[in-house]
Length: 278
Ligand SMILES: C[S@@+](CC[C@H](N)C(=O)[O-])C[C@H]1O[C@@H](n2cnc3c(N)ncnc32)[C@H](O)[C@@H]1O
Image 1 (tube, helix red, strand yellow):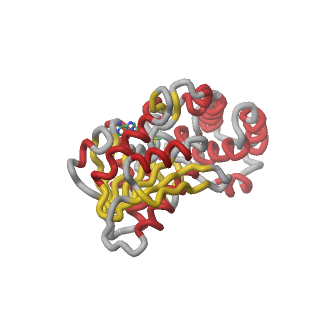
Image 2 (cartoon, rainbow, N blue to C red):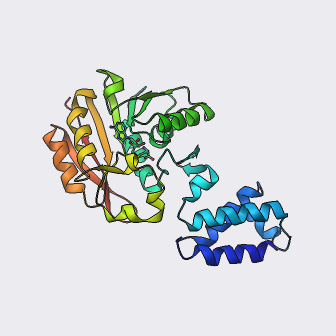
């Protein structure tokens, strides 16, 4: 019976997951191609044996730490449903702060030019492209596998105002300049203890780890950004909660002004922005 299977799966997942009931319901609803609300209606039904076996497999994979988003093959971000696989970071709700900063910065700028560096699934750049149909958005990533997912998402969402480019940070854009440059780059140090958690262990190291200090990618982007900002353009970077002061210093050292850090809903310093010269 579905209610019993869900209860058993919830108990198993409670060891490794913060949201065991939700995870179990999402996995079962996915296999039954239905939604979580409908599971309640079906709770007294028996599961077909093939579905019960597939559910057991997914629960075991989740128990081993695989993110639910990889098991479902998709993740909600901002207003979008994005395809994801282990080549891309699972987009985080925290990163929606960068979308909001970008939209605020572009209010009053018609037909803005936007660059999303290290786009992964395309989350930030595609959310901005969806919100601002008048914008021209470029999405870059070093990883060809990640960029293939970003391109698949762009096409599936029909966002004709975005395009994907492969390469190292600003490498693929030549000397182009933008009203807004956003990035959620890798910002963990190689020895960061969070890397030992089961979920991060399933995500691509190139999306998480920056180098010995964790600040390497943030510094590389900050240093080169001023040459790619239009007059008054804004650079906005996501970073770790303990990196706010260091990132403010990187942006000031690069010559940006009006440098300030925004906090997430938990009150932690998670994104810093600066403005280019007029
Ligand atoms: C933390 S993930 C962010 C993905 C996505 N923007 C998000 O917020 O969900 C960082 C991304 O930067 C990419 N990346 C790492 N080094 C890079 C480099 N040198 N140039 C361009 N992209 C890079 C990784 O492949 C990864 O997709």
